[in-house]
Length: 166
Image (cartoon, rainbow, N blue to C red; front, side, top):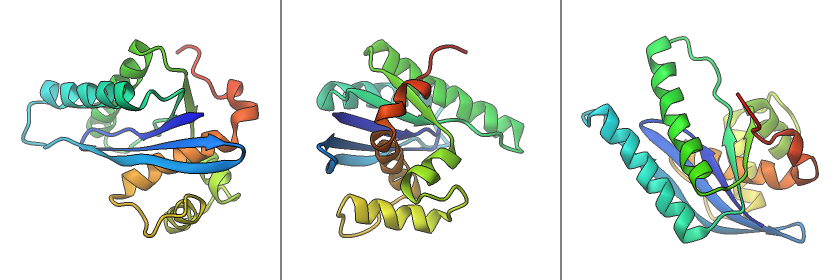
């Protein structure tokens, strides 16, 4: 199964694409979609949308695992990130790719087995599980890969994470 993990963001949206088959992981690609704060907001959203539509077209993921938005103390920032996250969801929906949503706690439990794990622990486990030479940078990229791994580990329970309605 080809799984795309997305750490949604406006400035940096990290993604990781893996193939999970027979309890084995194969890294297909990973990276980040980056937008500049100097760009107009609608153009930033379009860049995210176009980038993910291209990723979907090239890699043809069978599932998308995306991080659930958590509350940010800065309301203006939270709204902008929520709007960007909506673009990620729209792109996947337009390609009819099943969407699954995971909280940061669920990702930590799925990768390290402990919901209060530190970010560095998650990054190290991503490196080990995927047999990478180094931790992917920026952090958002490692988070995207972690989401894909978390979904692979959760496949037998995946329907309970599937986004059904809001």
